[in-house]
Image 1: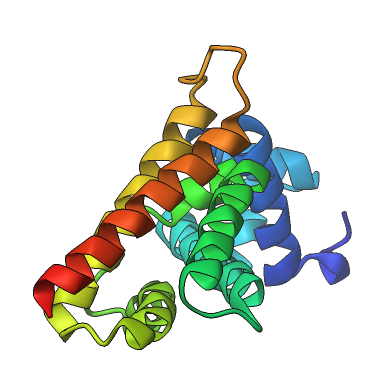
Image 2: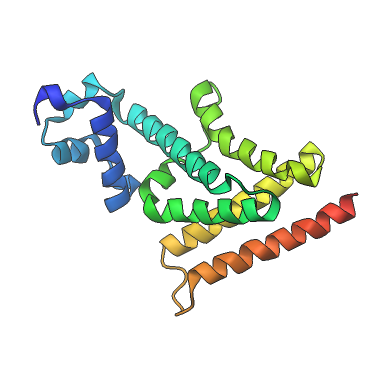
Length: 191
């Protein structure tokens, strides 16, 4: 690869592909340089070492995940929006397992850009939950529950935790519908 064609976007794309193909732990400066056909020191002209690369992966992953969830919710409200968001979340993890893994550590609270990117998906879910007229804390509890379920489902699936010959998409829909039914019941109890 010529010096001229090496830039931050090219490096990031190669790191995403490496993470998705081999796992996030396999993304090192050495493995990335090898994939790009360059020497490791050349990466430092575009990224701030491994720490900087992980930050860029997390930021990009959070943006893509939220964009996916937002696109899934467009034109929908309430339960339909939440079901679509849940399906989009798991689809993103299936498509980008390594990039998704990069999004998991809690962001450094001093990194305002990363904190904002991390909060975008939470805000999307809070916006969808507005129609339920929940108090903010109640809505945040619902968001935590939904995110925890989706993360757990996607993580189990990624690690081969669903070994039975049973449609995982159907399992996902049943899980989401059950949670949303329980949420509806909770909302009525709160009122």
